[in-house]
Length: 323
Image (cartoon, rainbow, N blue to C red; front, side):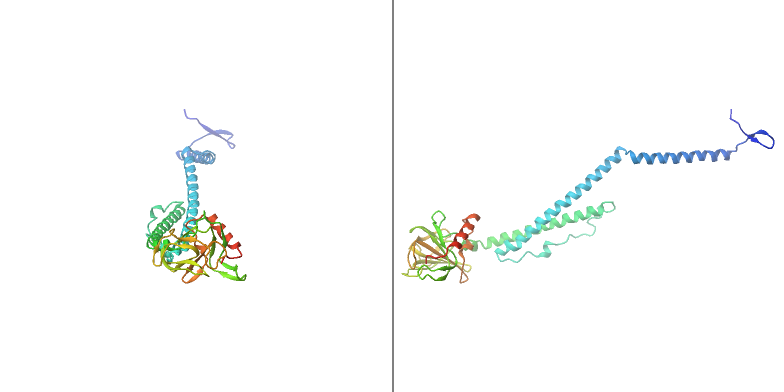
């Protein structure tokens, strides 16, 4: 049985029955429905703020992880770019310079990556720009290493073509370290042992026992063999080509003849004390394009960096020559 509702009428001082229409019921229902929706929405919002469903939490962790990986990747790209630039710098200033080659063309090193729609598939996402920039950096880095590889191939070809030049450069000591007593005098102004005045000493004096083997310091041909009572005494001049000549003086005995071809490391004679010499030693000179240069700058094939530094120091400390 439906419940009846009444209201008090103050005029008649009696209770009168209230009648509800369909509209009244509809309005009342809508009020309850609206209130329920509002309360439900507030509840869902509060729940979402404090509690996350497993899928949402997993996706957020995944997004955070991917962002961290992109940051780490860019950091590694920074390191590789620095390494690539260093390789390019050494390539142009050292490796190519040795062979007199021009630097590798910069426009080829920095060549762009074509294709306007290359990254089209990556667009349309919140992180699209960051991903696209990272991909571009990787593409540039790949191009840099590809071009560097091509440059090294060029250098390799230069080396093969100029292997004869490398073998001809006077690059070893004319007296072996095992036989060497000391370097009595280096290249530069020295006190002459006979005249006792400062005079330019144009080579290195290697002191060793008479009869110690003397080696050709690079491939070449014997240009001159001469014997004098003064000056260089028994001495040999080797023409190496490529602008290089070497001189070996004060020898006790010569084992080569003019025009003979010699190889680096071949015995050409023995240490002596002939000519204007005050003790057994080898006076050794290097000429490049007719100019006498410091021989110490060319010893790189048979001594360690530590031995080289020691050689320079000993040569610099000597203040009187043997010839």
